[in-house]
Length: 472
Image: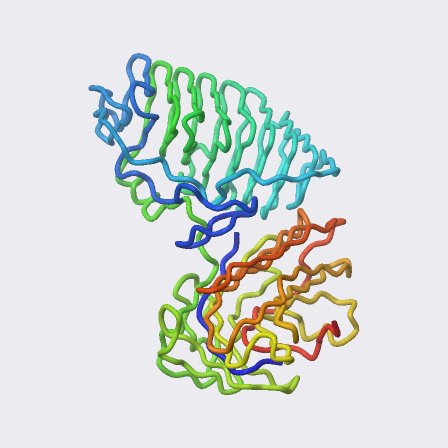
């Protein structure tokens, strides 16, 4: 059930991670000290300040010999001084996790693993991975799009890491030890492979490295060493030492620049809605996404309003019945498009106080098939009768999870920014609220027991989308 109120934007998928232009919470629960951002101009190689960038003999960038001095190199091989900070990834701190599962399968699904032992050709199907010890005796690793958080990674000489779909983002907590003849996304689009050194992690690559991607380590202790005969397409940016052996060949051509155009270490949203259209009538696709491609539709008389918090907003009329629902269907499927790790953020202003004694269902992705049985997957965020913000969800194994904050006596007409996060793999759930007079949050950690997000519906804002309502 909903009450009348105004809505404004947006939701994104996250590692963990700082979201859109906000210095928000990451999956590690820490605020960004330095912002995520873009590559620093046409500088494919950047090291820490001073003399921390070094080369062996016969180093080339786009076929031109490296000349001059400085901690950076431009696309014509000229060394220069760069004072631009290396951008942080959207996940500013390596997440903590404790895993017990081990696998040596040649097909590895998204999940949390104490150890992964790879041999032959091992394929990762994509999503979010938390891996304690990754021992790769494989000749080929095939990585599908997703976030890979790896505490310790051991590679064999001659291993090929192929990106079968991107982007692939690899976060390393431990140092990568030197191996020869490694091929990272060789010949591929450099925008599809991103490697981030977190904490004090370092990376050493032996001779004959082939690398197509972007490697970033923002800290002054994040250093990279590359052996002789390396071929690099893309960029390496670190706050520490960046040392190359002899006969380095870097490609950062116009084609490379085009491939990396718009590259950012910030996590791109799956969808964002600013409700910029002046009127709605319930037509499919009428609410255009400001980011992403999932256009939504209104129902139950929800209308566009010029009195949004930042831009325009959506006004949802009072509705105290279970059906029909009034609000906005984003068209984004929570289960298949957002998945096991995600974030929803929006502004909300109610026409009644939060603790008015009436429940206010603000977000609901429960499938119509769930009904009132309580055994099928559900997902919703509600303001309880006493003013508490409550996130409830149940995954594919019928185990319920809940996270709440409050209660809070938020007055009618108060804009509140709501952030909901979930990480089914680690069993972490949180609700965070902010307004001019309120900064609050609540989180919970529950054993995931292999629970995944489940087969849910599209994300609906402003009302319950089914007849399923939890009784407490």
